[in-house]
Image (cartoon, rainbow, N blue to C red; front, side):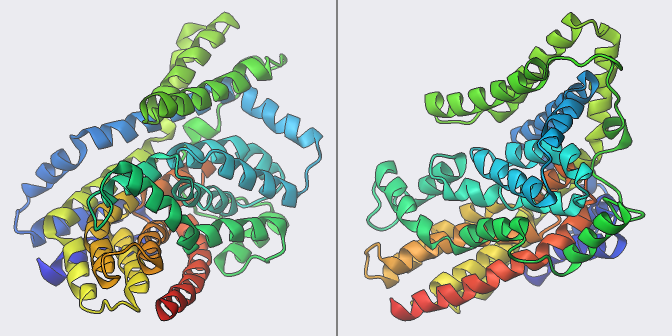
Length: 463
């Protein structure tokens, strides 16, 4: 549908920044998009049915619910509070709390969803005590999740990108594709720069700037972890849960450490055994285990069920945003948003500029759709064969840089887009206002992108 195809995501993003209400903005953009597509008013429920009635959304919906329940259980058993107290006894400074969050984000590299939610929710109590703004916590968790996942080849991200490379030029099978992906990792400048920049900012070597500086000043000087009028993506039903045993400290190992180890063991174990990270199943197992432990520790079954329901209620704002984000993504696919962007950028591609143009195209597509993986699925089969042809049929530096540019550009656009699922989940884990998280993260993402532009131009000149 040409230029019309970019209007729904553009409207959603513009309204989100203007109104600061992501749900209403996405709803309005979906409704307007359906009318632009000529489907009429009845096309709106049809869009929601197509977007939400599939395995992908069901998976992330259940993942959100189980994570909400697990966080509620952590708080009801007092383990979240106990973990905060345990870390506080180490008397960590603000700098060390930020660095600990950074290290945790890099450690949980095998799932960007798990990393965003787990690190944010686990470190929130400690971060709040250290007067670190929720925006800063969301930034650290977000910028160490997807960037780390795309850099480590033994993740679902690496497997997905490698699979897309099979059959391109001299790449004949999965083994060769995996080898090419590994060779491209050093050229994924955006992901590398992003992770390093988080460490530099967390350590204080690079000072906060832009909206983040204002947010940190508010948190440190006024004690306001979120701005007045902000709407955190976790509601009070989840954040205000008090421990059941007021004067009794339950086992931190049994109520916190063991469930976490269950999640990590199942996630890594299933990846090794069946080449698929079963994140949702890992959280379900942890929820069942902790629910049984809570009953054995004297917490009544009705109380456990009420706690679980409060956990579900607590994540509903994030679920609503994810639902409409999926709808926008579906609408964009039907209207040909990505194809239009490719048509506009493809004519500019030359051997010298192809890595840079690939980075720009990936950034724009992922920003408009809120999907890194969707961007990879669209761009890699188009841009990489073009790069191979321009390289005379070989896999040279320019081809490797093009693969890496698409991988990094997808993460960059994902970071800047309020439609992105990982960005939404980072806001959820940190209990931050979603648009505030996006606004404070964008300047840092732009710094990384600016350096990438210079580096990809340099590679284009020397190859």
